[in-house]
Length: 494
View 1 (cartoon, rainbow, N blue to C red):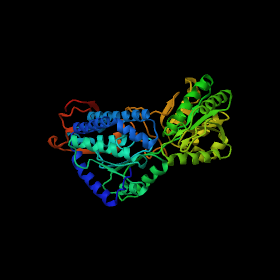
View 2 (cartoon, one colour):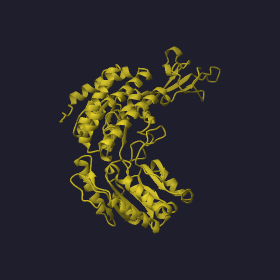
View 3 (cartoon, rainbow, N blue to C red):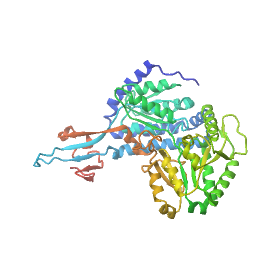
View 4 (cartoon, rainbow, N blue to C red):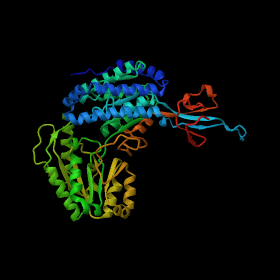
């Protein structure tokens, strides 16, 4: 199905309507937001079978993977709705007046309030969880912000179906007209127009570095700059420390062969760089990893554009000085399929060539072979910001490599031990973010209810009478929220 790109006039109308909705929605009780988001989840359950069918046709992803992602999206909506109602994200601070202090201390009360309309860009590799009703949308609604989704053209019909489910939920729960809008646009200009619109107050994006950085730059050129929360991918380095690798080279290789090729390597948490120290254990690891990769069949990628980019970036990486192919799948790829590939390079060559640091989005990883501990440390110090970093290590390895561990902490948002980076749990303790260029703001996560904090700002009320304060800040705490009152956490009335 072909959808028409939104015109500038249509975008203007949508944004003005969204602003009017914001003025009403931000005043609704948290319970009403909760009801709306639960209704969205229910609507996604109601259309599960046809939705997965369409998404499978558009993305080439298997139906079981898509159904799992759909269920995750439903869980996200409910989880973030529950967090919205709990209100911890409001970060309420109350310091009561001390009139006899010199000078007198005023009564000051602070809480978070929504930013305004949020533009969300759908992700190509997650048609549900990071797209139309995905995490950014759920966080924005929880925060009290209307959402304008720019559908990803690679799964536009899926996005349209989900959008209609959101419209139905909004109608059933009597949300303000304009609380949600859905825009189509093949090229960058549609997104640029949305980001530049004066009614837009924040942006959520998951995708390529080029796309996320371009939107970030546009937003900062506005007369009123706005925050752009771009999650732009990562190579997710894995450091193979010697004692643990000696103990479990084959098991680790098997685990990483599966992680590298999961969903044809089309995860932003795909382990694209492995780093080890020359020796017998690393040789065993590489042999086992190569044997596993040879037995994994090529598979169709999300769409022809991603398949073409994988072929080009893979070829470019393999053409670099000192890079060798260790293993590829024993089966020849068909059109638009990703060929599982493991390459190797010496740390000397890797340190000289920043192109080898770049993501090859697909079933590809490169093993960087270091001469010793010092060279592994040097590699860590030269890596850019990442969503994740992993160590394969014993406790003794960690103790023996403390400077390396500290260096890795500086470049990642999630630090994994003896696991794989693929698979992002939706929970409060998750941090799906990281230092630039993994994201444009390492202070925030795009997964877990803490992601709500991206779309709010603090405001303090000074010397306001109790009757005029928001319910969240009133003395009797009618909403029963946790608040920090005079430096003590409490749900009690003042």
